[in-house]
Length: 400
Ligand SMILES: *Cc1c(COP(=O)(O)O)cnc(C)c1O
Image 1 (tube, rainbow, N blue to C red):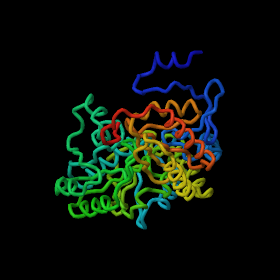
Image 2 (cartoon, rainbow, N blue to C red):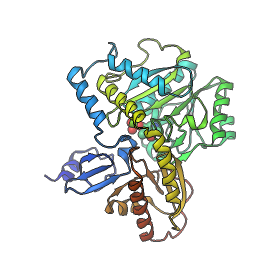
Image 3 (cartoon, rainbow, N blue to C red):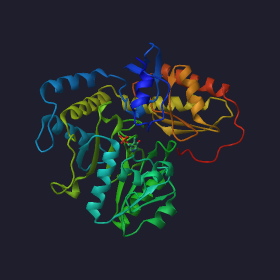
Image 4 (tube, rainbow, N blue to C red):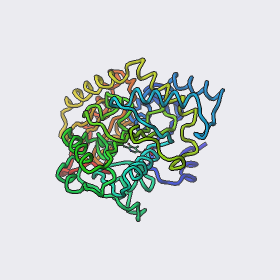
């Protein structure tokens, strides 16, 4: 069976593909059809917080599958109730939250935008340049990359983009017409750019001044990725809404948006999703939260991430412009294109992601051990040494 040919013939074509057929995974590793093993520093786009096929998630899904797979939110459910309580414990701040469960990051962003408009009765949303919030029409309207947006215009009206980390620009854009400011505390897809603490603090103050909602998109940064449950904790800034997704259920599709409980419940019928809050996803997410806690993986992510960044800084190559990131969300900004480096690393048995044209991004499982991180760093080092020297410096910015 020629898997590549069959997929290529029938698929939509929207994904740039790597020349690799994956058929099995376990822990930090995946295997191709020929039985070759790869260290997975893509973590399935940052989803595999507990690695591939984590036993705790397998067990939770198997148990739930045998009891109840389908339960839309028009009914109550034991697993869902447990997950909502568990989320209260891990969400930042001391106040409580209300939570809408859905099935992906983009859906969580869509819900956050709708809830902010409902709450404020206003339409305008301010997002940041280089922001990535997903590909559905509302989330895409908040996403910045013109290549993702332009073919699908007109998008949802009312969105504007200001430079990230630019307090003056935010101050100039925000006003009594602003429904929400949406920000990734660490921009992921746009090139791994952590926010300046003063920027997020100013965003909080400005939202308070004008009665706008502050939305943090923690789809990529949430659930321990940055060494805290949520990246907001690094900044001591509490948003009004938090969008979640990616690793939340350890590989099972899920998304969620939390909003401050003091808002009170939304009107019944205001929003919904057939699969939202389904017991399978809830069981998987509960297993993820329990495992992250029991195995102290979030503290581990902070320590290992710091060690890994130190190790990456020892790489002496004129190709490296900057190392950025927090915890196990790390970008290596290059003077040159990321793709050839990623291809060379793959030949060496290490999978990593791009973030824009010139950033190599690592989103490894939080269970990763120091020797694996050493292997990733060594593969990057080899790829950079072999890379042809850049002819000229690429233009600023990592957006892709
Ligand atoms: C991946 C991502 C999304 C979109 O999530 P999907 O599950 O792909 O819809 C939104 N925001 C951020 C910050 C992301 O990293």
